[in-house]
Image (cartoon, rainbow, N blue to C red; front, side, top):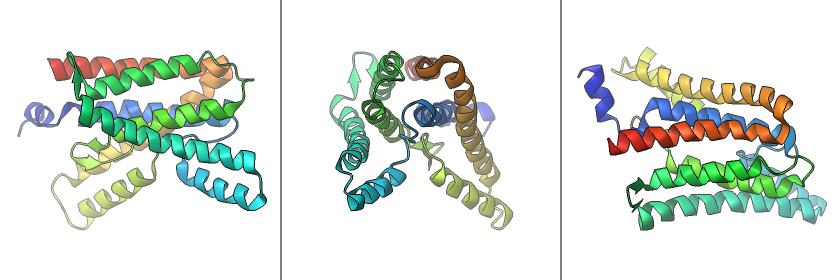
Amino acid sequence: MSPKREKAAVPVPQRLILGCVLAFTGGFLDIYTYLIRGGVFANAQTSNLIFLGLRLMEGDWPQALNYFAQVASYVVGILVAGVVKRRIGTVGNLHWRQIVIFAEFILVTIIGYIPASFPPEPVNVIVAFICSVQVASFDSLEGTSFATTMCTGNLRQMGEHILAFAVDKRPGALRGVFKYVAIIVSFVMGAVIGTFFVAEMQEEAIWICCYTLFFVLSYLLVMEDG
């Protein structure tokens, strides 16, 4: 199959370019909340569950409630993405993923107007929601699972593809290694560039994600409707 036909065979939402841009956005959001919104990783619900248990044992109910709210918001985001997919599907010429990205764009824009001095908890709840909607809406990369807002599963997939290439000699495995390396590097670059822009722009740095989300939305609009 020619590269052109191979690309055409991949569903638009599963294409590598979108995965990389969304992973960049995920890394950016993570470092943003860590540096300027209370020192937490809004994408990392495993750590939030650990801290929830810790605060419960310490009897720190306000902090326990804070971590619970972030976890709950993440779950709600998963549910919302599922409902949009199943119940809405399309609105006019908009497909459901386009609707999700547009909603992300609006929320990210609003967050940039919230001062850094504002209590971080409500902002982190919103970011957790954004990340969960994104990860639920874009969970496949050229036919295999991946995540745009965390890297543990992507590292596992990369390792499995390295094994498939080096030991099993499986056709196409090297392509799998490349695509997961690209996703992981994009995530890290989001954190690196996010660090720079947070230092320069403070709370408004999150607006950089508006550009990446605008690219994703434009790509979906052109390629899915074209």
